[in-house]
Image (cartoon, rainbow, N blue to C red; front, side, top):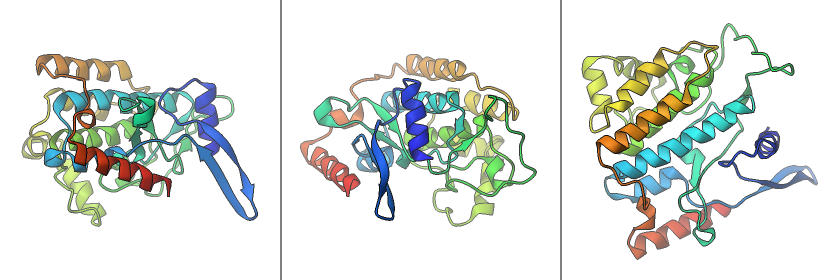
Length: 262
């Protein structure tokens, strides 16, 4: 699956995907060689003050992360495990500290058949993904669709903006997290989820919740909301936070990058 998705993305000239350099089998083991990237967004976030990105950086990175999802959907796949550790920045020596790559397609599912028609939803689907970022559809065992990848992206976006999600300490309690996410759509729960975030995030949540299974998300609508937020808040998009970090932190990030190779 990983190789197939990467080759499809390359054929489609997708800009947020690593290049598959080689793949095959050695003895009894399958292998894949792909572009080396830098640290993942989760590791970067945890290294920053307050474990969050500055608002300009968060909004700009969020746009790139959503672009990657749009590119994946364009070739007929759902990711089903959108989270910060499945995104990485490019390498410093290639001047790619402002480039975001999407990773890990092991849970991908093709939502279009060979005739480019929608595959009908299954009556029940198993849980896929990571509890903290999983969409509500996943919690109730409903077949996921394009809007669900965007819901997971929004949880990630909130975490990058404010430093944590309200249910961060409940990752092993799937049902409790589901209830928390349901409450987060209303009043007190919504304020708790969105506290410290741009108002546009609420608009995005309501828009995504209003989409149905076969609906194509209006990605441009979301990009415009993020750009509007950047303008309203007078947020500085560049440089990214990891471009202006103290030398000790940069050293730490380089070690994280090396650990990704092991």
